[in-house]
Length: 420
Image (tube, rainbow, N blue to C red; front, side, top):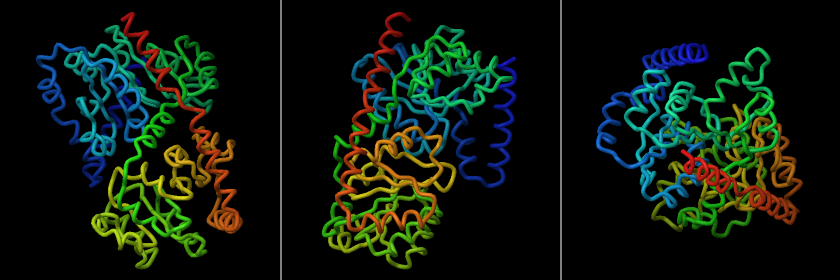
């Protein structure tokens, strides 16, 4: 019964995506086109494969970044294995596929029983890893049927999720029991799952903490931003911004308390960049136009990053950070900013993000409800750079205290591989 209802839901979703694609939705079209000929593509890759395969599935960019520390460590520890990464989202696939080393990359086929059977017939993984919120019942059930161990890690559960609704609990238990084991971010998540009747659960923390630490330690040099910060005392780096965030940032800029501002929009496309340029009325320069212009970059006051892949490194160059999305559906990755030891500011929609709540409690971040809140906070801190320094230190310490999730996940994987 669970399989039937899930498959019906998936097919309806597929129909809606198709309609959206025909209506001109570019992302929906990429979602459809990316899954064309998946059988023949995978067959050509794995037709003569005799190497054990570990399959990792992620939804999009954020989940891939979350899974990357585990993937990289597995590649080092299991050099005789082959790795397959599947994405659900076109944005994740397009941004990350070309940068993934020593692994095959494709889209996850539509989650139907027949697709799951064909996919596993072709790939024949020895183990499957899922990151955070990826619950594809038919693929998981087929793995369980074939005794392929599956592990979900960096998962976070809250009482408001459908799994814990009284009438749906029997379905939820069967749904989640398709996993061989589940690694959760905190004790509360483990209690929720154990109350649901699940026994193979362990606390593994959140591997994103390890990921941002690795990015920081790699210390990638970005010449444009290095030139930009020359002679500037106070720089705000704003990442993953939407239109509402940029309107707020304009008000902050008009206070004249900043020497420079770096804006990295959530979507890097001509329309979004032009929108930012219109708000700041000729004060903005694009990063792509300053690659070889050190002097121009240093004189620029507002820099817009119109290239993908720079945000997680860009936060290093600010004195404080703003993370966008808090005035839309929800904030983006606050850990990328906090790891550099700079104060972090974000909007009110963060209650679903435990890492943001913890960062506020640690004293490394603040949440604002409006542009006026942010303006008052900036004015208050204008003469107190020591307070900003203290906040930054607390943000950095918070990150260091929560690393170690990758090693916990790897230990569990080692145990599973030893008995499977």
